[in-house]
Image (cartoon, rainbow, N blue to C red; front, side):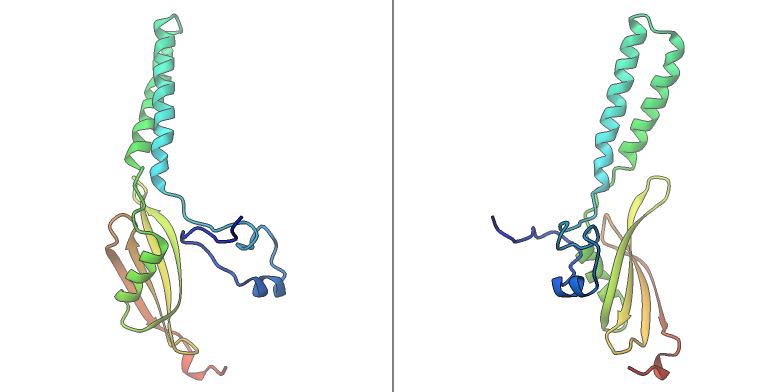
Length: 169
């Protein structure tokens, strides 16, 4: 069996660093496995379950269940419709979001971190990328928001790191 990990976006921690920091096994990516952000499009599978349940309840009403059960059918259909509407495909992965943030900043990026969030009533995925300049210590930092569906940069904010000129290494 090969020790190679799949080529998915994931968190990497050097095994020696993890051991010296006494990182718990449930947080150590070398022990657990590579981590990737799940695709929100899987919400559509839940929509199928809701729609199927609505159909079963409607069939039950036809076979003699109380007619008040139509409220349940309606609620299940609304839930199914929402899950279909909110089932965006996360086409832009973490590495792509980091690349877009690097292009959107006026300085060379050193360290960066990306986290996906959701915006609006349809829960559109948006990457929030925190970037720091490549100099040591970083003199600038920024936040870049990248659309998780199209890869478009939605906005960015850059500022000087307070007190960076007086820090000593």
